[in-house]
Image (tube, rainbow, N blue to C red; front, side, top):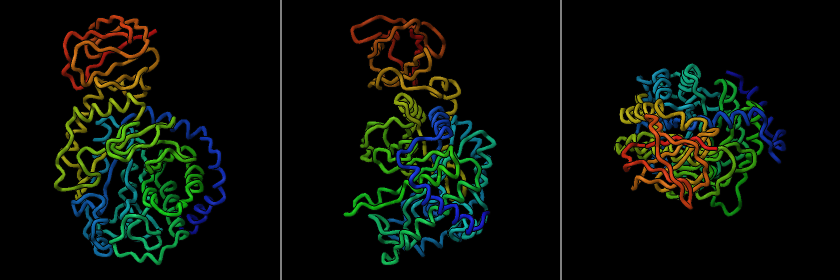
Length: 433
């Protein structure tokens, strides 16, 4: 572990590097990371911390407990069944290309060994193991990239300036000290980008805590983004602020919605030309909730992944591990099913671009070179009209390579499937001119 003196010096670099984010031009390393990220199309989100012990989700602290009482849970946090190798194996078998792990959530508890605070997995719990180190090593061995979620807000530290959440945790609002808190964050970010190998993305969350301030709150993001890019030039910056991307960001995030949709009320921002990612849950909550057992089935999850790919976006699918360190059996079942589907059909998802037309009610399309894959996921008729002026050389069923009849219409080619598909995703492969 580097000394705090060294970390503070590195964190101070952010001030001098802030100007670099003005007129931001991604480095060649960032551009390469963006390409790799987009090619993955599927990632796993992990929300795990001492909040899992209460079984009420990751926002439990915001709903009434005092921070000092809540913190006592750390003394009982002993995830005896945590096995980083088993997690990595499950994610790899599911067909994921990367994992986004919550290094520190809004409750302020750090799930890694940090010198910036004793409130962490090594110093505050009897477990005394650096979970992040074990996971980063296991993921690297499986060829999976690591992204790190990091909260911009904190419901426990008195130096974090009050926003619109976390008012009942017992913090003294008169002790807010932005300079102190900003230094703390940058020290931790320096640790994360120094001690855990290659990190492909930092995934921020919490900007929205000050989105209703009468005077706009200055998060000093350009300096912080510049620090990240200086420590690991290929590390991508993402921020779940529910806004159009800011200067210095490398990915655009959509929460609980596909790009351009806003059914959950969190993703009304315009769609940028950056690599896109939609994050969503398998059940209802992000963190473990003991009563939240209504998991989406494999068909629903696969279709969501397919539609995301048809819009040029990755799916970051969340799991809330149990307090003992196990992944819920229902989550493992869904991962297994998605992995089976991707092993058979991954060519039509990985490394693809969105197809030549926007998603339709019946499905969507993806493409690569002179191939276009038509994904029929919700058809009501056996005849599918493709709303694009495609010149089709050949059309076959992806599953068995049997020919698919094609005719012409004023709107575009029409695929005649013979019957209404009942598959999770009936795929037709087109070779186009």
